[in-house]
Length: 381
Image (tube, rainbow, N blue to C red; front, top):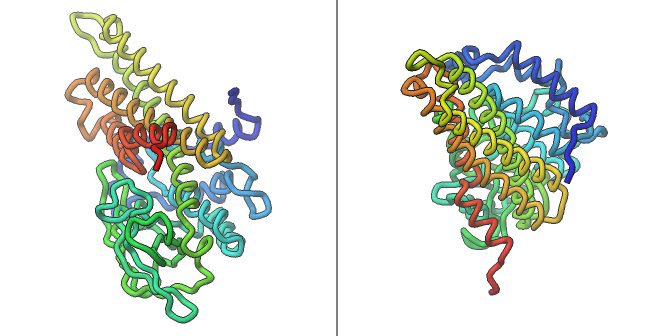
């Protein structure tokens, strides 16, 4: 496969890179993460109005730029380089993707608002004790006239504190771990019966527990066919995994660059430690791990529209490598920096926290290796 950016994609990357270099330095990010809001609404508005990146992955007929997975990859890699806090993944990749592939009428109504920065979505799918099982859903959705009545508990909903809407999975039939009977709903966060308990995460972001207590949702707010949402959930999670890999690649590239700069400046025995052969070898290994992750992420982006099995294989391989590489690069960066590598004042420790959190999102490296093996060599029933 030969992956090359088009002229438009290169312009998207360069424009976003310049904006973030000017407006999203490490100290500004630290201040935003520790503020009461936990993010930078002004930057989100700039992403929408000044840069237009929120529409990069949406079709032109809905007001977007006609892109897809490669555009998400470009944006998320730049976000990873600057530890951007804004909820692009949950809003554009997951929320927007759910609307786009699940309900054309809702997409026509809400995608333009996402592109304009007016709507922020939270991905409320994971539940306590579900681990990484995508069909472990206990939240119930029972018919109540022309509506559905939802009750349940969603956990670690990243971006929920900022959200205006939630994409919620609920079981309309079957047992808690059945693959069938799962439905998706588009729900306003301020709907009666919705409670969000907010908290910070280890990487400086914000998440929340979403509690649903007899939340009444019109049938028109369902995404996809009743009880048949698992294939859509798989598609969206694979797209999000690819985007997360791109973010991890950006964060790892920044860790390597900072480590190289530090090794050129830090002296021991009267010489820069960057001249020590063992550290040069270690930084070369860091570079190779990042390059492997970038290559697999590009394959996953190119396979986003492939058949489900091929798409899932590519996404699982990329996520496994990103998780492995993130651990290796992060540990090496901290080791070369020494004790100061884990201080709050130095950026490298924050990047390491972010790639660690990325590894745990939507399935760790070990989980993705098992998933890859199961997809490649399925066990006969």
